[in-house]
Amino acid sequence: MKVVLFRSRLRKDAGPDYQATADEMVALARRMPGFVAFRAYEAADGERLAVSWWEDQEAIRAFHEHPDHREAQRRGRADWYESFELEVADLEHGQTFSVPRE
Image (cartoon, helix red, strand yellow):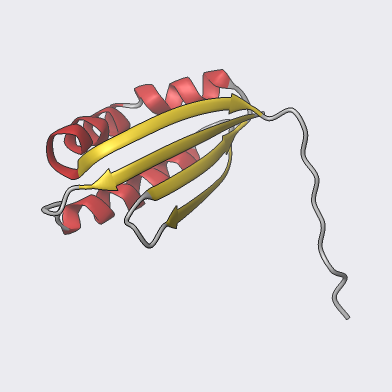
């Protein structure tokens, strides 16, 4: 399994079209073969973190190269992001825990 970490900061003038497009990209990712899960977080200082899990590198590549995602990437660089950093990692080990519900 692969994990994609996308850290970013939005420009002050990023408009509401950013969130609409971000929502569309999450919906697109969920429909892609090999998609596993997605979570997003925002820190108090404005840094954002999107984490997605994929079955393999081919699934990530297919999403990355999808025409709608390519257009969103172009818009991100031109209109929305002050900065971003993308990292892809192999998930070597996982462990879960939950308290049993009564």
